[in-house]
Amino acid sequence: MTMQFGIIGSGSWATALAKILTDNGNAIHWWVRNTDTISYIEKRRHNPHYLNSTYFDLSQLHLSNDIQAVAAQSDALVIAVPSAYVEDVIKQLPANAFHGKKIISAVKGILPAGNQLLNEYLAIHYGVALSDYFTVLGPCHAEEVAAEKLSYLTFSGIDAATASTIASHFKTEYLNTVVNTDILGVQYAAVLKNIYALGAGIAHGLEYGDNFLSVYIANGANEMVSFLRQLSNTSAETAHNYAASVYLGDLLVTCYSLYSRNRTFGNMIGKGYSVKSAQLELNMVAEGYNAAKCIHTINQSVKADMPIADTVYEILWNHLPAAEGFKKIETFLV
Image 1: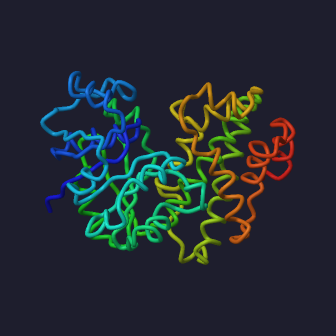
Image 2: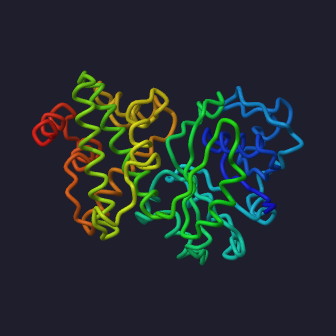
């Protein structure tokens, strides 16, 4: 099936997805907010701010700072904007902008204003049906995509056939694709793994070793599964395979990889940086920061047992000293 793809966003993950699509022969409509960045890409063939070793064939790019035009020209629209900024970007579109289109979320967080997943926000404000909504997630750092190191992405949607069709446009020699129907679970798993990765960074900053970190991550994985089962009201026998790459794999790479901005942000907190100082130093969005607060609020309804996520929340938002918080975490790890 021929599809016209649009990409909303121009950060590292949006740039990586643009590379994947164009490497597989797709021409794309690409919304880039800054006109200077557009001019630079048109002149030099790469994004000056992110993954600048990735060069594009300009004949495959239709660059524009007009988000309405990009949406109108696309059959499938990839939204790859940090969750904290999604609403400000999307609200530039008219109410019927997504009619008849497939929406592919590459957002790895919760929209903080309403503690909503992107599909919930789009359903309320744009009438997007869940059957037209898909996600692209998985253990896949943008930097490794740029280096063409073999990676895996999971495409999720309640319409598995269409998810498979969308996935086929992203499959390359260095990118394998997996299809999954757990559209809500994979999104919450992506949110939760950022919280645990941020905590892993704090542990590293506090000079805990690999032995402790392995126990911490194992307990974080169990906590994540507990939340997902409670959320979907499923038993261990009927639940999805939470050891799969989009769940456990993404958690592991985000906790361990030096490319992980959440781990880096947490490392700064563990070393004594304030949240504000860490944000300024990182100069990129660490999704786990807002996610910690959003999940804390959401879990008041879900009521899963989440002592690690709760403690990371207390460190980030209620000024609990990091060392004190991890002394507390030590007591309940198994």
